[in-house]
Image (cartoon, rainbow, N blue to C red):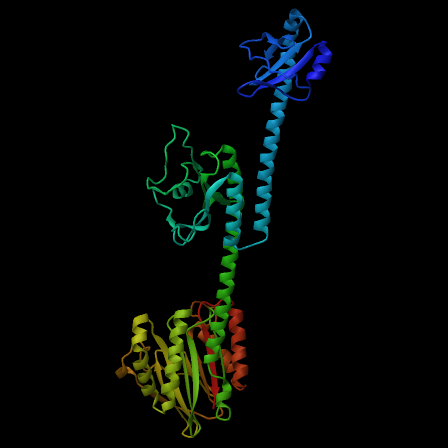
Length: 519
């Protein structure tokens, strides 16, 4: 640069830089072996080889240029021109350096965002990704302490899922309504809070308690997520403290961390959706298992093979329900049959149903009369029915083909019929209130004649019929369907009834059970 200017001006030009003590030759070129005195203003200065013109480079602190080999008048004339050229040169160099620094900074930011995209793209477990993200962000921003806190919707708490510079496990959750917590304030207000201790006009919004930070600056940024077509909501907070160099976070660093927060927001929501889907799948598997287990509690028709023909279908409206049936060999050709309906559906009804099935298995096989069996069941289940505020309608009958009779006790179950081979169906009226509403003394029994090989015992729960209107599957339609097929096997009858019921009520609102027996 100096040689080129010398060639253009016909003078010898050197660049000098003040190092705090003396002027030293700057740039390429031979060292003259001396250091000229530092003048206060531009002008001639003495040198070992004579006098030279020395002038400062405008707005280039510490830089001077020397003009030698020409007269003083010529040097004075060239000085303003060279000063302007050198000013432009140094300004260009300074701008180039700033651009280089900016590009380096942008490269680090782009590299960070790309790295985080890679991290989030290869894992659905937020905790695993969060630890890496905290480390990467802290390194780029230059923070010793950093954390990611995620909002727990069920408890309204901010929980630390990843941290650097301290243990995440040792940092307890923060309530979102905590008025002393910066993170809680950032979450509530959905805005960045930055503390710059070098600015005398700013105050510290954080807790007054001493937390042993190495610096006073901190940067807390909300993690936002906006679902398609909906406004953004805060799902967490990123916190940064303890600058490695200096004690101030820049606006550029705040923008960078905000961009990272946007990526994390989508990741948090995706992780929640994945977790929710996994829980739903796990629950679905558990419901299917519960459904299968409950149906296995119901006896197979093969139990009565040789003594009676029986078919039954039980369909809970949920995965599990409160309908049940049972049948038992009682010896001498006699058969005990029970069907009931717990006053609810779902898991609570299914639990009571399991207790009822257990009690029925114990008491029905004892050979007691139907009313005694129901009384014994009431004694076993009374406390459970009272605590759950449930009751159950239940029919229990003993068919005795040799005696040609059906002896039964009906605790509030309205859907029990004897359908003869010829003639109209006969309702088997209730003999007591439902169990849970009845006392042991109120349980009575009844008896009707029975024609073996012809009569059908038909029992169902109220979910199968609906008295709400002519377009629904009413009890009259159900009985008509049974009468139409009464000469057929019980299995064919049950299938025919459910085919019509399904067509009439495709979305039933209660558990549905039907049992048909011929003996």
